Length: 160
Image 1 (tube, one colour):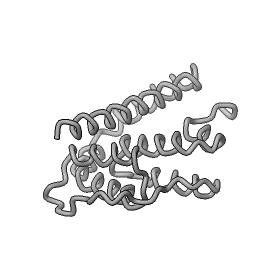
Image 2 (tube, rainbow, N blue to C red):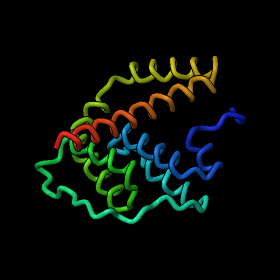
Image 3 (spheres, rainbow, N blue to C red):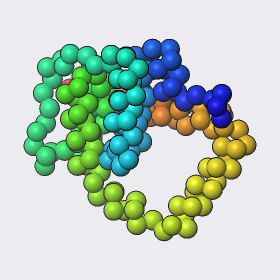
Image 4 (cartoon, helix red, strand yellow):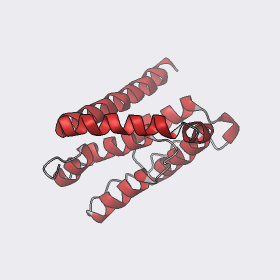
């Protein structure tokens, strides 16, 4: 496993800002609640590598009325992150994700321990079989999801 690197680690090694941003958006999509602060840890990791990922905010306004925050707005923010990766947009996206998906925190935590351990066991078995392939599949899936979110946003933007 020491030889295998994640998409994010590879992007950091390459100092590829576009890939790093894509990986960060994938982290947000995978866990909008950022339950274990993984997304924020990634930001710290990139910062400690001396890589500047932030862009100046493009001026697009945010919806501050929390009653209007929904999954569609969250997806829109993720797509906008791909075109303008500003600190303001990042933090707002994180805040919206935590609000929109907060009901899922209790739903996920109420899953039985047996189910969770079965899932983890099957993941471990697959990882032991072919750790590089498994990691690449996960990254490929996250990239597809990020691309779909961007396309969804752009299509809706064109319709307006």
